[in-house]
Image (cartoon, rainbow, N blue to C red; front, side, top):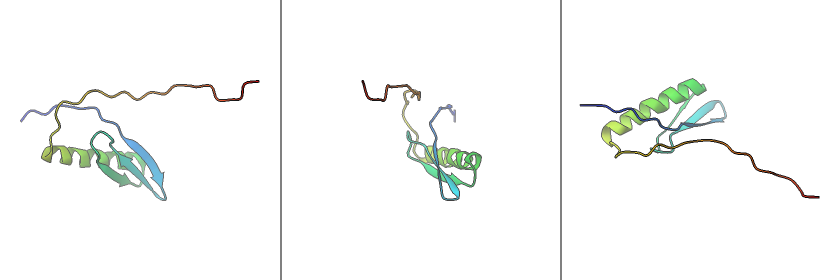
Length: 74
């Protein structure tokens, strides 16, 4: 079986004493006591999910930031 690598997004937030990690493209969620552990757990959960439910070809997503003006004109 050939395996292809995909780059996915991890959204991580701290809630109480744990870090919650979510992959928005797949919908998998996990947690850990550190950012690194939450991310490792999310990776494992996502790989297990994809073994059962392989995805069709995904388009590459890009995450970036931009700046806007925020103020009162005088």
